[in-house]
Length: 320
Image 1 (cartoon, rainbow, N blue to C red):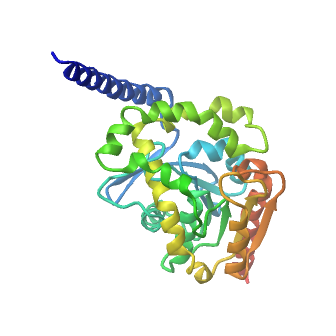
Image 2 (image 1 turned 90 degrees about the vertical axis):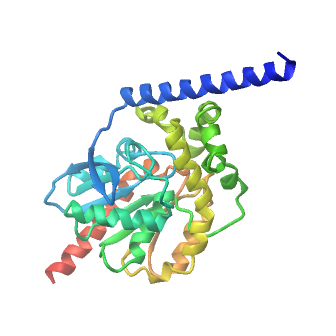
């Protein structure tokens, strides 16, 4: 066998071993971290959701950011804060946690919003407050754009609303490329992601430290599965185009809006929140001092109070 053939054989064997190792890793990660909620099938997509609180109370729906899942909102304390007075529903967005992300569909914020509106109708949810964090803020805004499904209000946290020059988002989108991206996702991407994950988590929470409960209880191994890496890469690729499509539509949002953003967010610049506040013309802007991208942890109490204020205002309007 020639030297070239030997090298190619070694590389092929290494790739096969990596693929098998990542499949086994995904299986083990899911065995250690089984679904914590329930499932609903909508338009052929199986969605995982978590529900807490009084089923008869006013509802708040929570959408997480890119790369994470339901547990993020639970560990932040938001679910506990809200469940005392509300029906709380958190979804794993398509491709994250235990929700499916069929490849036949392009999962823009608008297509996700349309799917969730149908899922909420199936669950009997009417006039909710919708809360979105980071990429989830775009999904929440997309629900706010449409008129067929009325909502009480929006709470948008750490969102990216207007296009800027961000090469980092494009660089993270590689695993979404068909065929080549699939090979990367099942071989080296989980290893690279595992190596950079601790630093990324510190950056998400900076300038504050990473909470102990997040360190110990967040199922980070689920984020390293090849199928979730594809979803995260696609959303990195879609972020700037989605913000470009949405930037002229914000004034069409008619419901009340609360905007939260950390003043020291190292992932998405705080100026995004100010621009949205100006574009809406009527909203409440909350800039949280000494907080980073995970503003849901830094000031979960104030965010919960904003949700409750929207619910109370609508309840008074209904009685009037």
